[in-house]
Image 1 (tube, rainbow, N blue to C red):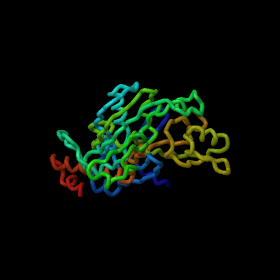
Image 2: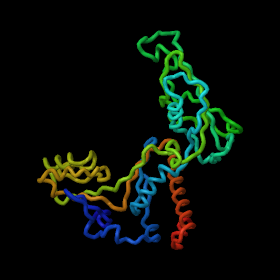
Image 3: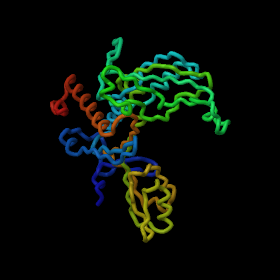
Image 4: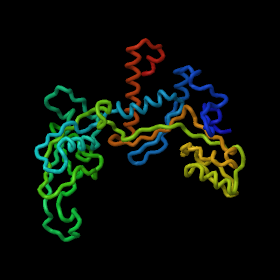
Length: 338
């Protein structure tokens, strides 16, 4: 018997969705904190570069969606807030250039900085980072390569984020390293220029959250889906096995040495239900999704992975505590923060 057999499921039939026979749906469920605490699990499945995939097990959709919204809007990060343009003779307008600079993700750890007050005239080394960008495009005196390529004909024809320079204020030079403060990626194209074009500007970065502006969001995309579950009701072999394999995403259905199909990894399925197009094999499969098992995928921009996960749960915990203290809620929920 599979571990998923006793879990709440949503069956994916050919023309409709329905709950499993032993599952009465969310309407009849009464949320219980002790039960939630016992069954709730977090499993980190994959971390590749700036992308992370993890599972939340034993929660309801409301909690799952709240967690996604926290990723996008409540976890702080550092971003460029103000741009003082001294000279801009490029083709990009000042306001568009400032917008592009604000969306460049920074490596700076927001936990090391404080929020800057809105009415503060000047920033301090504890709440502000300052950067400069001063570049001028000129003709390349040594045209030894292909003259038809702008990279060989001109110097600084392409302005990249790696050309942004950090200028420490106060005691920042002794506290931080430039490699830990600058842009996350050095190959972000800011502007294209030709001889005579020049950009000279000063930037100020502060701490903020995505609820105030999207540039402060520490994730590029954050999505979740229910865990697929696939069960074969009979033996499928030879040509039918090959056809069944083609009906699912790569890696979902495998074929053994005897030519029989088996479920290799159901979590990679997109639940397209292509199998129902073929009468000879559609009776061999039961497709469903585990109703309380969510697969999250988040593309991170600027935060260390481990601290990013902790920050999300800390934000959720703080939100629950504020709600419990300001509302007439049961004592059990008020004790969740502990």
